[in-house]
Length: 577
Image 1 (cartoon, rainbow, N blue to C red):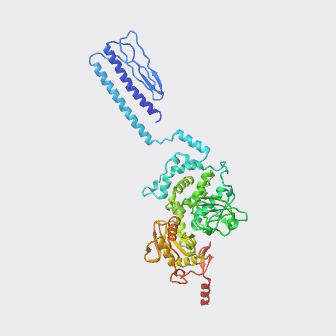
Image 2: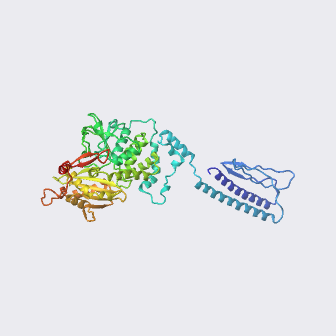
Image 3: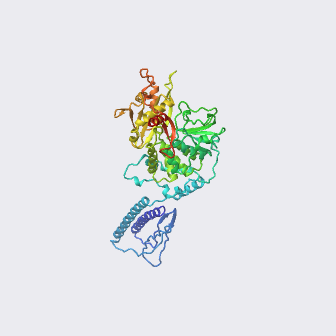
């Protein structure tokens, strides 16, 4: 394709020029009415060289010799001389020769067009990796490494295709992997292979050997980020509280060990780096703020942020997931990324961005997902996401009301911005599920628990959003009139079937992007905690759950957190007696 067809086309053009040249010489000889014993010469250009035709004349003969081209497709084109019979004399000889020449020119043009068509067909149907590109990839692999040799194969260089999904539209996950495939493939050249020498000159000195710990309400992002950061910086991963079922599934799926509790690891001189948060309200009490040497997060800096005595390392990016920052840091520092750690980071990104559907998702989140899919070799990203979220949703059916309300809860403080304004504290919980109806059917359990948690935390309002991750909509649970007033000012949504305790929030799914900004706007717009006719106890404190939270092993061998009312049990025992 690269050498045969261009040279073949050059030969055809040369053949046409030769025929034309011979015709002109014959016309001149006829006009002079002379005969010559010389053989006309033609010169054909081939690879910038000229092949000169030899001229021969036979003594004693009075015939005109005509030359014919002979070519060889294997060697460089060579012009050979041959002898032919003399042209016939007579009035009709010139007409016959002109007809023959016209036929040869037409035939040459036809062959030329046919050769061009064949060459285009071969270009479209025969894949060919250029030799220069192949050499370049080998040089890059030897110099920097790619982390996966199979990615340099012809299959790895092709664009990713999802043949199994041809009968339906691509999901956001598939679309992201498809569109970011080439850019993500380039990123892989920055990942060294296992055992390659790496320099620690770019690693922050403050984070070497530190403990990496997330927030108290532990989720998948805080655990995966702590594990990844510990491998990256040569530290130790820790957890601030018990893990949920989704995190448990990811640890088992990627064969990673559960980090130990921060209380069991921290010492007086231990260095601690916080991951996935920077609020004091989410800090484990076992961590002194003087021991904090770094923060890796993706949330906004609001009130009640960590305060330190000296400068610390801070890496806060407006991305959809903190684990995406950790994965990108492996690229920046050119550190080897174990595949099981990459799998944990991938699962965390899927969880925090709702399979890349959340409004907080950025282009870097999509690119990192595409990179990790190639690096780990995930065959079906949709199947992985479905398994992960099924594990999370399955646990909701067996989780206690306390676990549902407190499982993914964060506290926020708001100010109107005016001098002397009152600080408003709001607790906001989120339940992400594929079966929102099953969660809303448990309102009779959730409402008393929400009021009890509100009382224990001493906050002005307690809100709970049930997020339907399939239909991308939410239902906001309102445990009292204060919450109803706040939700009306912030969201102005419609009540579900006239239920005053359930408000529909269409298209809102992210706490950081959709739920909190309207609350901030409402408070700054003048909303204050309402007083209901001087009532000592608001309606939100009626029907409050009783008892203390304990670990109960009756239904779950591993134990689960439930609120137990011992007084009621004692009264029941006395009545039975």
